[in-house]
Length: 376
Ligand SMILES: Cc1ncc(COP(=O)(O)O)c(C=O)c1O
Image 1 (cartoon, rainbow, N blue to C red):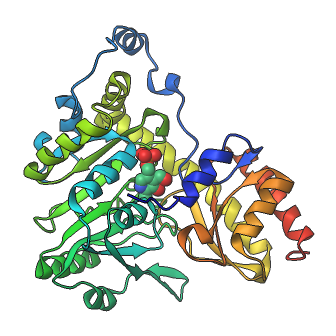
Image 2: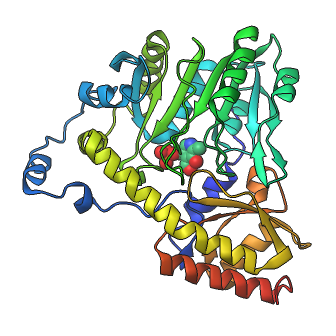
């Protein structure tokens, strides 16, 4: 099996802890362990955890907490994984066979794109449209044209990375209707659900067809990427099959991570964490929006509905990878080039970190724009 390089992750893995200002992240500033385990009883109980192989598909209480977020889901509809990345991996590995046709929303997080191609699928791209407003929207007619009786899987990312766009219920129903007509599965990566700036939760694809797989996790909306907790929600028969795939990847989540995830997903704690995320998004987005506006005609972007990212188009004749490489080498700031989403001419900038960190990173980006003659 030949894997194409997952360009964005390779760049982040290599440089994210080397640069002075990492604005390549899509989530908000992570929680500290002490913020999650913030009283003596919970500290004691964490210290008493046995560092065993915990329940391999996730403990029953954790799966119950996850299932409660999806109408009519039960713990048997849930597989806990090591990050959203493993959730996407085992789902794609299980479903995609050589020669399959896959239709995928783009731009999007490229993991399933790269995996499906590695597993021998023909991946057809379904582009989001940049409409007046500006706003990103889906084009149902073009999906209808792309999906055929040979389509095994439709992959969407909602809310979307990198645009931050939210797809609402009528559009999700329209996608489900097309999938149902053709007998296709839908894989909906919903890891940014709960990170909406306006606090209106993105509707889930779950329940709109019998062949829906939702992947998600604690890395984005919950600001807990270091726990490496993700999940798949799918019909129980598929979950049973995925569990045996998980035997070949990581066997089980970490025992401490499972325990901490249970704590994060208790209803009151969950609400508190999501409120913190929203507070950061709403404090920081105006800072980057003003910065982009101050650069006048150089940038245009659609305000993101969710996630701590803007996906900005720039109007200057320089390749996005070249711009990002110069920014990293000369100013020690990391952002993501549109090239990593197959779209030159764009930059994805994360705005979820602490305010002064964000401002410093943006100042250095301004300096680079001066150096290359793109700003005055
Ligand atoms: C859409 C999407 N899915 C999955 C992941 C991977 O998540 P995790 O860090 O939980 O493995 C990311 C990370 O950037 C993402 O943006």
